[in-house]
Image (cartoon, rainbow, N blue to C red; front, top):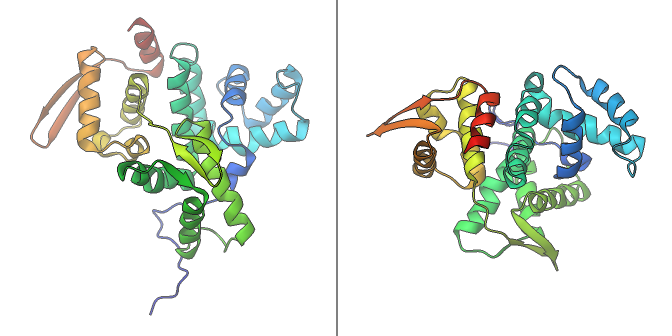
Length: 270
């Protein structure tokens, strides 16, 4: 008989409490992106942020936590590629689309949030639910701990705190509404055209084949399955952003833009 607690397989990233450094941080992230320059490390960004005066109501200790424990893991991974993409697009796409991209990169950096959105939020949405309760989040975290998705067994207080972080982060990114009694109301969350374009191009620039792009797990963060993704890509094709050919189980995409900077120019022109 297998023991209750098992280590996850190598393909399953361990869950952490890193969301405690900050939930959505949309305003703070926008300010840090203005200060960040390609090649700048987290330490250099922190030094610039501390000297900038852009965070007058934040203590130095709090700013250090935001930069090193939230901004850097989300946007400075992969040699700063997420930050480079966001900086190239900032001011050129609507704020709502930028917020969806911040949500995407936050989920990539925090697998516990990504799985919660896919497995709890969208499951409740598909079932016609009107809200996600604290107990829903706590049950999700408890199951994860029991399955060995954390480096060590979390205490009950940690489970409760992380559950609140999950709900709060979803609220910051527009998936859930304000907390009322013990639940947050579900807000309809639909992927926006610019988000579709950026995500599809991001996956392409990372070397994924056209059919692999359709099946990538990131689309599930927006409640999309393969057929939904194909429909969204057809809309991109109608706007002239890509050339799409799809027949049977084979999809071929002609990519008009060669860099994210080119894409940003194209999105402004649309």
